[in-house]
Amino acid sequence: MTFKEITERFAHSESGSDSFKLFFKEAFELMKADPDNAGLYFVVGVAAQTYVIKYEDQAVDPEFADRAKATLEGFNRRLLDALDMEPLARLRVLGEVAVEYEWEVDAF
Image (cartoon, rainbow, N blue to C red; front, side):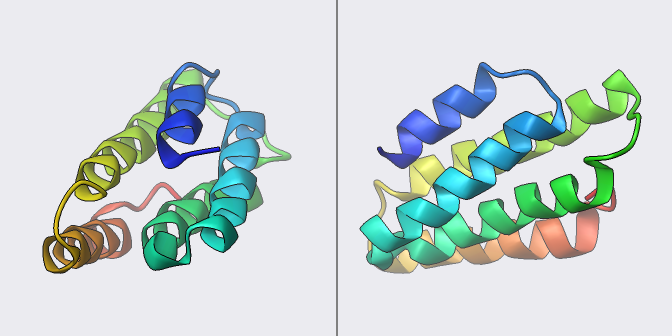
């Protein structure tokens, strides 16, 4: 399983918490298989896991769920692109995604 496969499966899935749950589990598993890039998978895995923790047992407005999914898909695209970059550039993108998630995303 690759990060590209995981992100494509997530992109083609519904916006419900089950999709976020599968995504974070696969991202965390990928950390073990690709430790050189584990930080990238960890950041988006934690974001997806947080969504599940907050909203798994709640009725969520479909528009809200779609926006949250789109946010995570945006992070995934950026990190997927970063995998083709040199290590220093990859680390920079990881930092940008982490900062954006922490300081600009308040939904999950």
